[in-house]
Image (cartoon, rainbow, N blue to C red; front, side, top):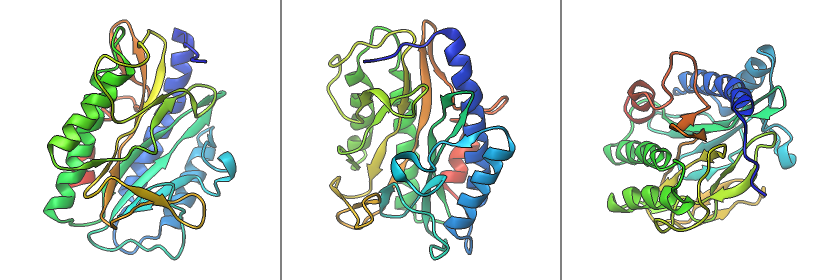
Length: 266
């Protein structure tokens, strides 16, 4: 069942979303050669707890960490580790969220570690733009298929693959609520979007083939061809005035080009 949210509910999501976005941005500033993904995870957990939240990911379904740290060909659900030390040219998807006041936050961004190749930079830029295009479709009267179609069309028009097995989702008191929000689909099809729906939109786009598999740890998803993947996510609320990004900091646009530049170009 889809749970529609009131204005007060959306404000609750904005409070936990602001902390989720802040810690994600700060974690991204740590992405540089020589830093381990465990160091980033430990920072995120400490920051969230010191600012009145609890890490939404830690223990969720048995997940062992406060962030998903997915490097290069890892699409989602990578385990942070002291043994995973970032190198020049890597990309790192950080997926995290803070729970505050009974509400769940969830957001992700893919950051470049130093200088990356032109083809990888293009992948990051297109995936970030897929997120923006999907969010633009989240208006009352549209359909879930409009979000997925916008993402899929932009990715495939640029020659990239769209992961089918993992999708966005509703969000509220629980991190994962109905409905599923695929990153592919047909325009004007699927559930009709209504005021009060809150969704996590998260394109997962591959440089090569779209097919993926899960590693032996039961969590980490990688591309079959070993080529890189990118993952970007924001949580939005559908209002009468259009989509409102709830994973946003005061005075900071979560789609700002500066964050995109950090993700896609250095």
